[in-house]
Image (cartoon, rainbow, N blue to C red; front, top):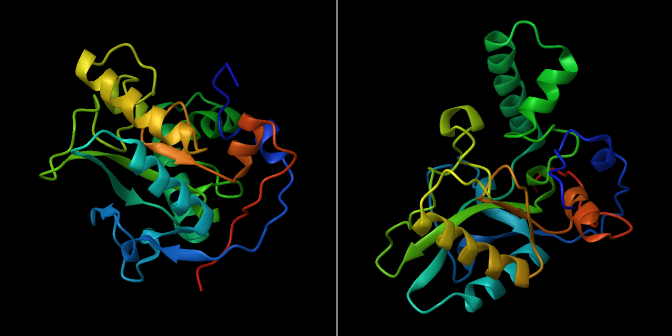
Length: 216
């Protein structure tokens, strides 16, 4: 995909899902730095499909010495995803009273996936960044989860309104994750996935191998 295809695009929903049944696994049991900023009581945030975790660990091996991945959020229960999406859509609707429902849905999907196709709810997506050996987060141009409105679009992976250091760090993150088989959602530099519908469309796969599911 050369142009930015948003999660709300009908092409994403049209991708079939043939779930391989792979389990959700706890990333805290592996050699991966995990941040607790989005932690929940059940620990759902720290889970991913096994194949996604394997690829994350491969990406980490590809990073230069002294730099590591920092995992922030993986699996998101469908009910939580719906709450996030509806909350952001309500915010956009309030700020733009002239927008149609379709415009609200499209704009909301730049930042939160529609719940019925959300990669996070399939355990297929991860929000992450880079840290130094002493745990300091590298400059990525915006905070993680900065909205397009808050960041003036700097949250877009290829945004030109971020500094040279941030652009270099985004390339470093992207090169390692791409080499490990993950794909980026271009409106969020921190969001990467494997095996979901977005990944399938981006890579030309016949179907997604992970669909939304409940934990446990």
